[in-house]
Image (tube, rainbow, N blue to C red; front, side):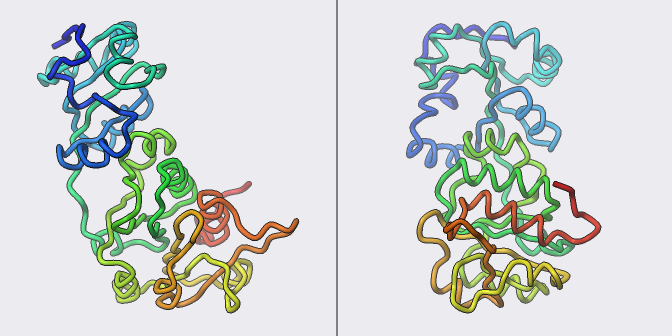
Length: 275
């Protein structure tokens, strides 16, 4: 049912309140079992992945542009809230220039062993705190044939709105879950047949070119948090430390850029993609 919203404090749209308050959303969204999908493309990718909407919020013109979704929502009894731009902005804290938001049911966490069973290339994100970087890593993972992504307990939420938006919805197509505890989880990777490679600067690091020349059949690449990089315990636990050869006096790349370079170089031959 399409429901006009005139009061930004309307309790029916509490899922959408204060979207710019990161600390608030980090707590509320997992507690309520939801996440927010923003823009038509992201919403459609979430639905295509089988995720279930709780409600929609959109400007009136999107009732036409998303007419098929609105009709399906009405058949399924899912609320579609419509508001003027100033009401939506007062409610969410930002200008909804992408037209539509969907409050989606957060899927149940998957078992890491299930994700690893048929995987050959896995990416592990250790304590990456910037949601933009998390989203960018997922987009690269989807593009470069990564089979699964594991995120450590303190890593930013891949289903936070900014992560989802930056990933262009690819966070819904790359299987992922939390790996806990960490770095003890390195043993889980190794027990499932993975060589664990830590991407870091170290005196004993091997070149990415050398690892790519003879890559293991099953590889888990571990990427560290912005600034400090990987923890000493993780580096000690890894089978190999690998670094990207660089020039121009540059010693490191942004974690999202580094993930793309490394996974392109280490992709199985059958999945290699051109520049």
